[in-house]
Image (tube, rainbow, N blue to C red; front, side):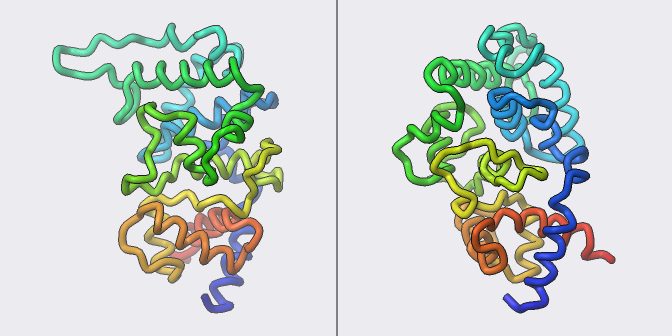
Length: 248
């Protein structure tokens, strides 16, 4: 990576890792809360539905959070998710909640969260107890069998899991929360990779991989460590900045 690209990435990371980033991003939803468990639950459920166009994600996340009164943790523990619409699909159709997910999928995920909080003080503690070494595989272990939790053997880049981990682990306290005092460190994170960020990374020469897989995400993360060695996911903001600025 040449010095000109490194300088641009540093400049754009500084420009876009700011509080004004929050209102237009899914991270706005966990920012509604101050209690750790509320933040964790809001962040995990928001990341779980973060497929597709941003405006649709924000609309559905807002709808979901309207159900979660008086707060995500209390809503989970009193099983408020069982009051979600059951849906009355026509014969042969699904009780669709959002895209690939049904309301039944959402209730199962919420039920798993309740089980976790009955055993652990936080979701972070549950992940810390998992024997798997990789942060992504820890989540896959704790949420095994839940729809929408990708497995390492597939072709997924695990973008939504990586985004959730970025929110919980990065500690600069600007956009991301950094509320987990567990063994997962910022330098262990993987860049949240979707098709758009993949294309930008190809243009910048951060990867030569033509398919957006977990291998590709790791390769881009390793390239970003040349610029941000202790905090490669700071580069996520830089890539967003590149997307905004490249037509200028």
